[in-house]
Length: 39
Image (cartoon, rainbow, N blue to C red; front, side, top):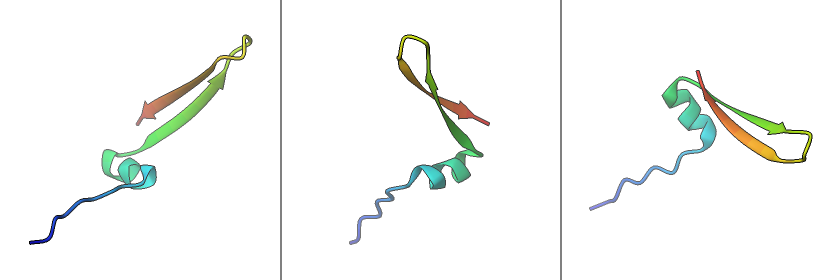
């Protein structure tokens, strides 16, 4: 029997989920925040 394991790229997941955007925000103190926006 074959195991069916799907390793998906973020692009494929975005298509499945109806669109995912990543937003990288750097504030004035130099902190980096990665926000995932679901459309």
